[in-house]
Length: 449
Image: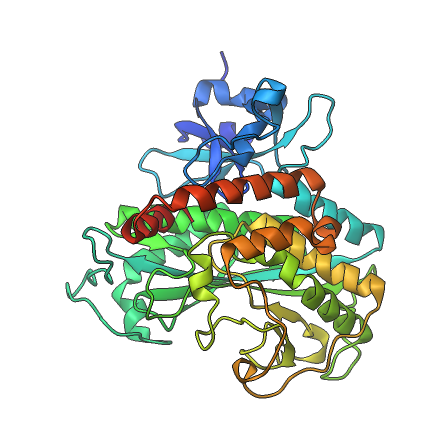
């Protein structure tokens, strides 16, 4: 039996020992199978099968009670087909391994509406129908953590063996202390075609941010963010510590965010947010209006876990009020200073613990609806947003679930089956997490999100 098509990726990479076929579930967990190399070529032509319910498990990996995807349908299988990304190396594993990302379809070829990647693809199809292309970048914040004891700490610097107990914002020393980790991380990003750009140390102890560069393919941008999270977590374990994107690992330090920057190009490649002035175009303001209007309904996407709401508190470098502003990091929606041709929107609400596909689907979907509705936003703010009386996002997990379920904006952004699955999932998690101590909750989120 041949182990790869003669002109395929596996044939060109004979060192690959095994393959993972994996899809992204609603909690952004990788769900899939390990397949020996000699059988992996079948994935490219035949795909594989998982139960539909696999993309709708809770954060522990348990079935959702009363889910229509489980007993009501006999826990039926869907067809998982390779995405256009193809094989991607997994450099953090000791054994040479490739990941084949897959997404789910019905047997008749219809996309499965509960797959978050399909939700984003549907939004992008609406952009394409209007001759528009979003250009997207993400900012990925994470903590490096020594979790070998009950008390979470900064890992020892490999060179000195010392722990730096304080925040070191934009510190070269903090970056250089983990130089080997970051060098190997960038090499892995290059191998995986993840456009990792600038790295900085952030405001938390052991906290860093790496920007993923702008690109005119939002599906690839979401793929890159998902792959990046898997890579950083896996690479950190190889170095003897943890990496976590959880929203708030330390109560006294800044949380992890995942800010999204985007602009929109028309069919001629012109940025529709640029009108030749620093204020930006009508389309920019209309997109902002859509983002502000949809934010309360979308908060469950921006803050999907109990720990997420520890980040969304005043004066903690995470927006709680709904406002927009020019060059103001206290606002939820920021218009960064830039050359006019690069005029863009920065969405600052979401935590690092999000599902990247759902995040981009809701942000880009809300912006497009705003453009189509042509509604004006309120006036941009100046000064400290935390000091203003502003509309608020839901402040608790149960409130966010309720708003996500009933707000008409949710149905404008995501397919009804996915909405229903998400609500069932989060209500089950809300119930079951009550049984855990605070230490057990931190341990749960540290490795999963």
